[in-house]
Image 1: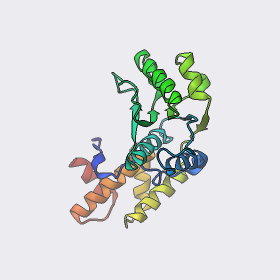
Image 2: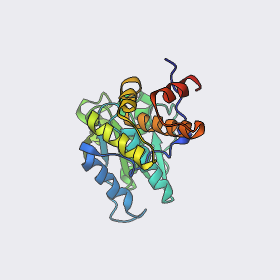
Image 3: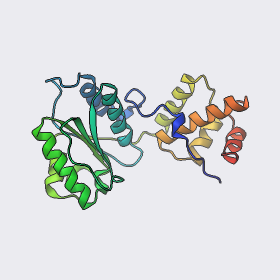
Image 4: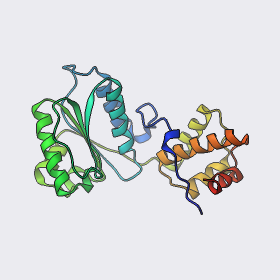
Length: 228
């Protein structure tokens, strides 16, 4: 089967509003409360936050949503994930520091992350980290691992299949698209079950259906795959 190249440009990008919380309501509300306050407000807590959970639980979605929300407020943020091979020095102009996939950090990235953390604490800046393991189980240098775990810690859970179906139905309804049960079954069994990927797939299907003036059916999806 030909793999669809998901065009991220068709999606609106991760936002807190588009995150279906399900069992992760507490984490979402915590982030909404922090991001919702004005930049520079003395009530914006500098206590770090750490999110952990398996792949597909929404960690990166939430970090990127926070990054976008702060940028929309005119705030600069530091971003570090496992793909950043040469992390920059800490910038005093950052309103927050975001660290994704910390469980994958190399020694160089761990050194930079620790430096960012120390400087962020000194400047009363927020640190939001995420990884697949709880702080106690992270195979990181001890001074970084303990700092990631001393603040707010939330365990993110992957949505159940009924919850994923509910999100897809809600997303389809918002687009004015009819998504039959057989189409949803096809999406959930033949493609990534990660919710973010499924929503991107829905965007592609919606665009292709409009382009070809057809309803969303399994033959349409197969045609889209053949022409991707």
